[in-house]
Image 1 (cartoon, rainbow, N blue to C red):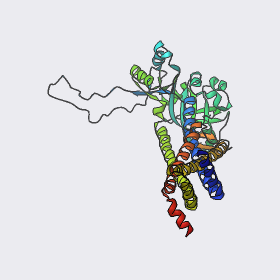
Image 2 (image 1 turned 120 degrees about the vertical axis):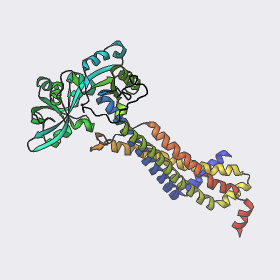
Image 3 (image 1 turned 180 degrees about the horizontal axis):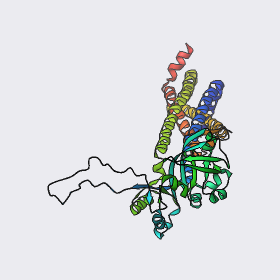
Length: 422
């Protein structure tokens, strides 16, 4: 009996080839679009996380002291009286980490040595760069290049030049590719850097780098001493300290411990990029909502072909029920047909999505995808996305077959056959 029902279901599907093919094509296209969209969205998030973890600090010790401003200034000295700070006015000091060598010593202790892989002090300074008739405001980041190499791997990001010339010359700078293009400067070119106090400094380009992170590629790297001169910092002060840790995905407890130990604000890369990660999460919710919506539309297409089949095969259904087929078997017959149509369309869509993902991933087009710049699109090949969309599509197609199958189960053989003979 079961084998007979399968044969009948296949005959019904093949008997309306054009309509079946049209429905399966619609299911396939929707499946392809959904898998490709999820792959693109998730691929961008994965690419962003991998790039940030690879070339950006995992934890940053910022020059922001966490000492609170006292609220009651005369507590204890005058009983019954209170004094409150209404508007704190003080010197607007730039953020700075004082005596950063002591913090580096703390990071070298056994408590942190196993967790912190590298530490790089840095000084950031806003300057104006001038090259001929072109000028542009830039962020200069002064570093100890040996320590910075362990954090951002800047040496392997160089498109031209090398770190040897950068180490030898105190006025040498490394410029990001975006800066190089905007100012039309290249290797060994001279650039005038004007600090906020109006003093100008002549610098020489020792290399051009490209990391793929737009913020980094729109900046300039100099020696730590040169940036301290630009900011007017003494030798023992820096803007912050960049850290590379052993476990970048579970770094919050370490950041909290360092914050208590140093008294400075310690920010994880997740907190630093919180707005971008939240944006990706919202896009993910939208995409999954789209999966459900388009899946329902595909289900209507499957239900439509089965409703037509029930209408045209009413006489055959009546005869089958006259021969002893039960209503439950009729329901199973058309639900199985919906399953076959959905499965065929979903599998075809899965194959098409492999081609579409490969095409987008290998497009020789450089695109700026949010905070990153990539050649081609960052696509995810996670097989779970294929399985999820195909499973949801098949499930919706199968459920959509319930309505026409219920109509088939309610048909009364005698009434149908009598009307057919009239």
